[in-house]
Every structure is written in C-alpha cells, then in structure tokens.
Image (tube, rainbow, N blue to C red):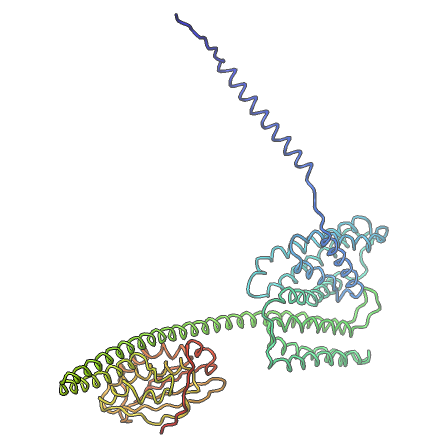
Length: 559
C-alpha cells in the first residue's frame, strides 16, 4: 500500500515579499528603540561641579572688582581655571561665567542692548576653551613655553570679540579711540594672564620635583625681599615724581632675572606674577575700570616683554636641567650596576677560593695521615720525604688560591695583601718589580674598592711585564678628595727616560677603564707610567654589606 504526501510550496514571489516585510519590521523596531533611548537620556549633575562653578563665579567677580582696563585679572582667572580643571568640569566653568555675566550685565540691557549682552557674554569663554584645547598636545611636552602662546592667542581673541561686538552692537560707539582702547585691552589682558596663569600652572605641577637646594635658600629669600622693598619704595614715591617710581619698578627686573637663573621656569612663574601684582598695588586708581595710569602702563609694557623673555628662558633652563639630571642619574645607575656586578663576581671568586682551600686542607690532612702511618710502619725516610713534598705543594697551592681571591685583604688591608700571597711571589720571581711609597690607610676604604684596586694593579703590572722591558715600581696613596674617598695608584717604569708604547697605552685603557668607571675613577697613561684613580662616595656603607663577616683591618703606612 502506498501513501503519498503532498507538500505545498510557497511561490517564490510571496516568500520574497514576506522576507522584505520582516526586515522592514526589524528596522522599524530598532528606530523605535533608539528614539526611546534618546528620550530617556539624562545629564548627571555633580555637586562638586556646581561648587566649582560657584567658586569660579566668585573668583571672577573678585578679580573684576580689583581690575582696570590696563590690568585685567579675569583674563588670568579664565585661563587658570581651564588649566587646572579637567575637561569634564569645563561645562561648569562655562556655567559659572554665564552666571556672573547674567548678574553683572543684565542691568546693562537697556543701555547697550540685548544682542551685545548675550553675544558679548556667550562667546568669550568658548573662544578661550577652543584655544586651550588646541594647545593640549603641547601641554604634554617637556617645556612650558606653550603658556606664552596660550596667553597671546587668548588676549587677541578676547580683545577682538570685546571691541568688535561693542563697535558693532552698541547704539552709541565708545568714546575712547579704537587704537588706545585696543592697546589698553591687549596689555591689560596679557598682564592679567601673566599674573594668574603661571601660578596656576605651578600649582598643578606641585607634585613634581621642586625642592630648593640649601645653597639657594638665602639668595631666593633675598631676591623676594628685594622685590617687596622696591615695591614699597615705589608706593611711597609722591605722585609728582613718576620717573623715579618707574625706575624703581623697572629695577624689579633684576631680582626676577636672578630667580629665573636659580630656579628656571619656577623662578619665572613666581617672580613675574609678583612683579605684576606690585605694579598694580602701586597704581593709583579711581575705582572705575576706565581709570588709566600712564607711568604704570609704561612699566606694564616693559613687564610684558620681560615676562615673556623670563618665562621662555626659564622654560629652556628647566628643560635642559631636567635632561642633565636624567643623564646624570642614568650614569649613576650604570655605575652602580657595574659596581654591583664587580662585587658579585668577587663574591663568586671568594666562594670558589674557600671551596678550593677546603679541598686543599683535606688533601693535606690525608697526606699527613699517610706520612704518620708510614712513620709508624718504620718507613721514616719515605715519611719525611712525603712531608717535605706535601709542605712545598701546600704552600704553592695556597699561593694559587690567593691568586683567585685575596682573602688576606679582608683582614690586613690592600697594602699588606700586595706584599704577601701568591701575587707577591709571582712578582718576586720576575725580579723586575718593587713596591714603593704606599701611603695612607687603605682600611678606611670599602672592601669592594680595595678589591677593585687590587685587580687593577695586578692587571696593570701584568701589562707592563708582558709588553715593556725594565724595572717596574708601584706607588699608591689613599685619602680624601672633596666629599669622596679613594686611592691614587701609579704603576711606572723605573727608567723615567723611557716612555710607554702606544700599544701598551691602548691595552691599558681597554682593560683597566671598566673597573675605574665602576668607582667613578679614571685611567691615564703618560710618559712612563699608568695612573689609576678610584673613588667612592662613602667608605663602607654600600659595599661592606655584601660580605657576610665582619671586616677587621689594621692601618698600614709603608714607605
């Protein structure tokens, strides 16, 4: 029995229409979801941001009350706030400025018109924000000279907007001539920025290294006191002597330059604002923004030029000083690593020398037991011969061990270690070397420095024995050099008329410089001698701790 099942198929055209309908429904649903999300967007308001807006508005109001056209502190407040606050709080700064302008300029609507009040208040902060934002990449550079560019661009933008909008939107144009107004606004805004912005940037970098060296505390205090005294004298000058007052204010450039030379950009960031504030305090004012003091304005023009120069020079000084410190620190780290490497190598040799000595002691003890057994068995001649051979080889074995590591140096010091042990016997066998004029106390030096000196002397003597004929003598002197301690060694040919060959000098520099650099020293090859200097900042604080036993060393003075 056969059963047939019939499958009905959907026509191709109908299936295509159905898929298109499903796709349209999906797109419509996605659009609805995006529309819902857009409607549900909310802006979070931070109380800390509102506090910033309030503080900024109050600071702007206070700065405006203490300012005149030729000394406009709000321009500096605006730049300082943008430099200190991160991006997420810029909207709150904008809100704070708008609140101040709403309070200060709303009564001016009838006199100057709503267009000027709105546009003149709304465009200033966004323009400065754009300028600061464009300089953000430069702010991460190693120099702070970009602050001058920010100050100049902000001054030009704000002054152009203020004067342009006032001449276009005011029903009655300003009475003051455009060129005079432009000069006052440019100088006033720029001086205001130089007064506040460097201090804000200095505060933002307060966590960086800004320690004042002990040698600069007194000169720095003297410069600051001198600037304040000159300001007080200028304030006491009568109004009928403007030339004397101007001269006193200009003399403040000298301590400002001195502070910049001592502290770089930080000195300029303190001296320039202090100079500007003192000029403002000595400026007579009627309390009206349009009040003008020609003598102070002349000083302000010089202050603007000198301030730019000081900030630029101070920035360059700080940059190169940081580079010098970085390079110097890298050099110190390299020297410390090299020194630790040499000490680790010496410790390894010391361990090996002690192991070899233990092995030699064991062999010597075994030979002694064998000689005693032979003596007990009646072989006295054989036992005596074995003892003599054992004593000779034991002495040579110990001399070779001291060539690996001079353990006697840890107890009797460098000079006696050079006069005993295997190295002394090796030099004695050549019949070409003698020690001469060993002065000072080497035990005041660290063990690491004495070991480096020991190896360096051995290498220098080996070079002269191999490549130069004639007698050789060694002289050394331990002592202090400024804040360091060290030793000066001279390995020379006894014949002063004979000079070292060029090949010997080259080999000496190549083989001996490594150890001397690890201890801040030098190698010099002159005429018939090799001079070696090794130094260390502290006698035993750093290197003695690498050894596991106390060091007992007697002072030696050998002539």
